[in-house]
Every structure is written in C-alpha cells, then in structure tokens.
Length: 135
Image 1 (cartoon, rainbow, N blue to C red):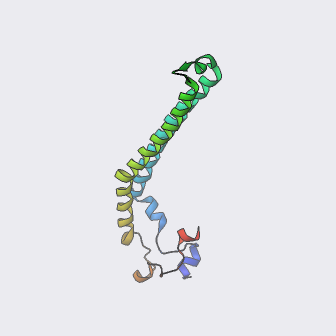
Image 2: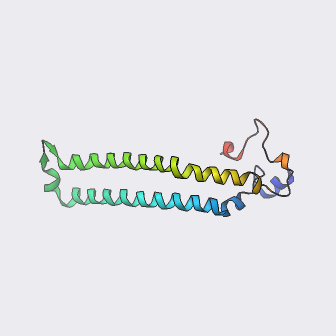
Image 3: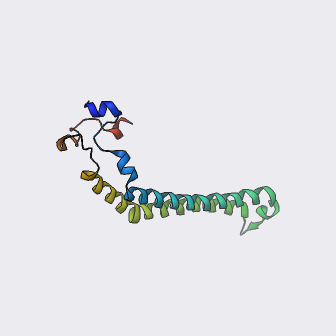
C-alpha cells in the first residue's frame, strides 16, 4: 500500500472527492434523484389510494366487473405499475444516465487523478482488489 493510500485509507489513486464535486457528477446525481423521487412519489400515491379504497370503500372494492372484484383489478394495477416504473427507469438509464456516466468517467480519467501519485500508478495491477471488489 502506498503512503498516500495508507494516509487517507483509500484503495486506488482517484480523487473521489473531486469527482463528486464535479459539475458532470452533480448533474448526473441530481437528474437521477429527481427522476427516482418523482416515480417513487407517484408509486406511493397510487398505493395510498389503493389502501384507502381497501380500507374505507369495501363495498366498492367488493363490486365485481366481469366476475372479477375491483379489489383484485386494483391490486394487479400495482403490479403493472411496478413493471411500468421499472421499464421507465431502464429506458431513462440507457438513454440519459449512461451517457452522463460515460462523460463523468471520461473526464475523471486524467483530470481527477491525484497529483502526488505517478501517472503509471493510477491503474490497479491485474488481479489486484479494487475498492468495488472489496465491498
């Protein structure tokens, strides 16, 4: 372990603090958080409506439509909503988040390596554990 790694407890030579403070990384995290918060809010609101109807509108939920109770249809809508949210997230991740992640990674390569480390020491040795593999 190098002296710089031993002093700050990091495994690797990338200055993660500088990456986290970069405008590209902040844009990525803010977009992702905004998207996830919006979808979570919609999902929780729909589920709260379902619970409210199941609790306070038992007559309505017991009504059958084509031989199927409305309660069952409402419960299956929760499953469909989960699939829809998952599909939306995967689509957004492929189209928007992945390019932003790539931009962060490209700019982090040379720009955010530590000045006190030699350039050839920034790449981990083959087979050496990285911060991610240790977790």
